[in-house]
Length: 360
Image (cartoon, rainbow, N blue to C red; front, side, top):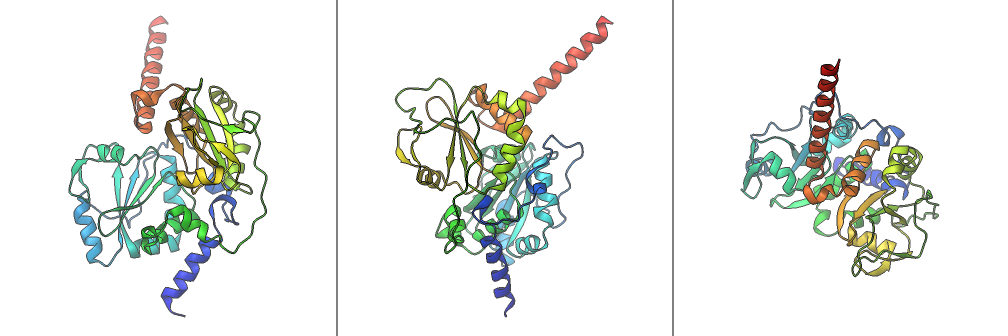
């Protein structure tokens, strides 16, 4: 069998065996989904196969094309991001993933806090920090795939287990992005398989049907969070069994209207903008391909932020506080708001410590 066919069979088989979070058996382990997401003490070290770039993505893209590659992947990260380290330690340690990336793409790292200048594939220049904000990298790590024409083929925001990463790489490398959405590409791997509907993890803070979430004419009294989930979903089980059991998280959820929907069901729902549809169609329109996905809306039905990747305690708590405190009105970029809030807290703690010393 030709080597290219062997690779295709292997990769496509991996996708069929790994439809996100329960549509098929993914082989996802607790180590992929459950970890301490407090900021790291030590700085992350990038893999040695990342490209040493002069931050001229226009030139980087041209060099990749001349080397016969499909394009470039821009990695947006932070030096002490636990989700970034998870990607380095798991996704970027899989031999098949590394081989496939290196064959089809060059990977260029971007520090989302750096003020160094970067030239974009379209020739524009800005700082790495400005570039990160412009690309809406509310969560790190973020991967942006550029094709040969300098167009964005796919964006992944946050950490995903290896099966999701494999599918994303092939989706772009084989040109599927030109014909279908990433959601449809993953669902197509499900064709011909049959799944028994699974029960969702219920919580006492979820609203019961009917789901009339319309806020288009009259604003609501509180923000809304919609949990898009599915049956037999290991990541959903981790969310409910660990993170949502934390008292701090449950307290932070009190100011919210919370609704749970099966993203593959025909459950009737009226969306925050007043559209009558089903959970499945709404999820498709929103482009959702990962479960669980949490989407936050303000009192007027406008989407504020979504978590559509692996999430742990610290990130979820911070997003809940960001929305409940209306921090998005002051700072649209979640990461910048988080950094500012953390600095204010540290400054207050330092001031309090100094005051206690003077009082002794």
